[in-house]
Structures are given as C-alpha cells and as structure tokens.
Image (cartoon, rainbow, N blue to C red):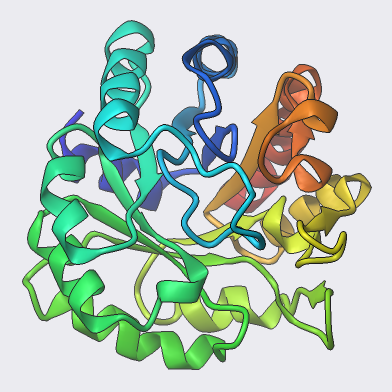
Length: 270
C-alpha cells in the first residue's frame, strides 16, 4: 500500500493503530501483529501495527527502552512482510527519519517532541505519513504551527493525535473539543485511547494507568469525530515491559474495535 493509498483510506473511513508499546521481544510483537491482522480481515477495517524500537522518554534510566533502531527496524520489516499490516513507529531524532521511512508506512512524532522543527521537517521530507502526538502541554489550536512545519516540505500526509493534557501532577484529562479543533486544520484526527488514561510517573520510577477507562473514552472520541483510534495492546498487560498499566488486553481488542465500528457506522451513515 502506498502512502497515498493509506492516507486516502484514513480520510475516507475509520482506522485503528494498535500494538505493544515497545518491541520488547520479536515473539510478543509478532503474536500481537498476527492477531491484529486476523481482526482486520474479519472486521474489514484498516489496522496499522504500532510498536516502538526505542522508548527514549521513559521515566527512569532503568526503564526498558527496546531493541534499538537497527534490530527494531528489522523486526518491523519482518512483521510487515509476514502479516501484510502497514507499520507505524516513533522517531526521536532527525537522522532516524530516512532509515525508518525505508521500512515503515507512518512516522510518529512523540508528544514530548511535537514542537521540534528539525524532527518534523525531516519526517515530512520522507514523503511518509507523519502522525504527530499533540503534546500534553500544547493547546489544540497551536498544532496549526506543527502542521505548517510539515507542510513546508510539500508533504500534506499528516495525522494529528489527541492523547490527553496535563492535569496537575501525575494525571491527564481529555478535552474532547480538541478533536474538532484539530480536525479543522485539515488533517485526520486520531484519539490515543491508552495514553489518555496514563498516569505519568504515577508509580514513582514508572507511569501508572487506568485501563478500565479506555472503552468509554474511545467511544466518546468516535462520537466526537475522531477518524482513528490508537491503542497499545499486549497479550498480558500486567507483564508488559512498557506502559502495561494503561495497555489494553489483546484478547479483548476485537470486542472493543467492534464497539467502535458500531459508533463509526452511525457517523459515516449521516
């Protein structure tokens, strides 16, 4: 699938980004990807596999980060080849854009880095879709400047993702107005269902989470106009090496997606 084809699908209908937070092992990643590919086929929905080769913004220096760029990109290439799923992964520095874009379909800009001009421009120059997570500290209307930086490269394939805003210490809140505001910038808008229930650094040396609120917030986002939903899923969230407390169980993912598709069916019928 070309970047244009994938972007057109994202404009025309609903889509899902899902996978383990980090590439903690090839086996865990492939297990999740195969299940997601089966769900995509059964439900006839576009699913993009997400996992990170490096989580460079973990709370503690002792936190698990992933296999790194070289090994991680090899794993993602194998997952893409064996499952047929498009791939999205994070980049953290401009020099990572080209080698990662050679394999993946979507370059994701982490929320903490959403204002980094050199990173946004490097991602835009690859011609891949660029998904930017709105920073927890950024007003939704200010994402117009982020969009402008990417569009300055001639690349208009841009997604914007709402992932909650800082609400005091160790907590986030979702302002659903953000979906409408960012949609008016001319980009498909995604709701990050699992990071929105994260409790940043809430467990001392790592983040906590309240995954029980993933379904209700996801449904609200679909009703509020989100074109896609992002969710980190794991075969056993309680044993995940990254973002386990806010990750959704893999064996409950199909039922949740069915719920969201029911909501989307009403939206797209109107």
